[in-house]
Image 1: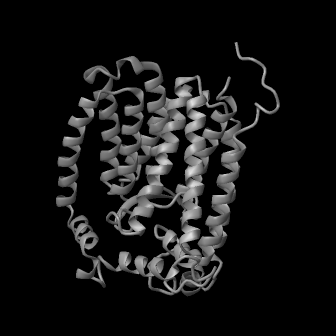
Image 2: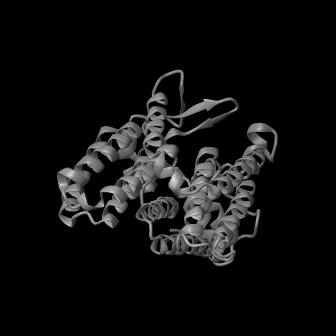
Length: 370
């Protein structure tokens, strides 16, 4: 039976909640600082992106608190329906007239004046389903046919639908997150070696099959080969980070946001932060993400319920993978992928679903020691 909780025990992880609020505040400030020039030019309103981000952040924060109050066991109970709904959305977005094309990808479904991105729902939905599956059938995970292969088929079915949009960045985050969950569950190393070989072949095929991906690889290796084309974005990003130095140019003093760095409020918002707040500001932000990682892992390790443990680790893995990919792109370590920076980048679906995920994590923290 569950023992009675004291008031202190019946609280969510306060440090994690504080870090999330801090990241949200930094994100709102940086979205305005990075976007007000573009907002004024495109919409005649320097607060256009800020007002929408405040709306997304407010709705997302309320959703986070709501999800924090829902017992995490609820998600296990309805995991099948959640995953089915996510697959339906991924199929609907591919239908012309329903799915909206942005940036060359059919990744959005219009809902009134706003739009949703089904692949964001799938990331969380698949984590929930996989956590439920692993908690019930963890003993089969060492078996290739009974545990590992069925999980892989599910993961790559979702990945395949996302690639039909196409959205390699989101698909990559989904696959890496789920693979980490399988590894934590105890899958055999030999299975991962085989998966790695197949993955390398498949990844090479995906790159070769799309010329724009090849161009991104070439631009990554030598952006100066096409400084006004595929290499333009990474060059401008480095131009932003470099002058930032140790202390930065000062809040609001970025030069690259003046029509040099395209859409600076989205994927490359870290470049503007580094330009204005310098190395110290960038390291400070990364430290906040490290604290989030630490608290998330702590919550998972303290959870007696296997479902809670896998779910917490899956959510934390998803967020940290996105952070690592985004910042690596911005500083030129990997090719451009189109992944947003959690809590900071402008966007509705991504921010709202991220906060909902954190709400689930906070609920697990309430019950982690039960």
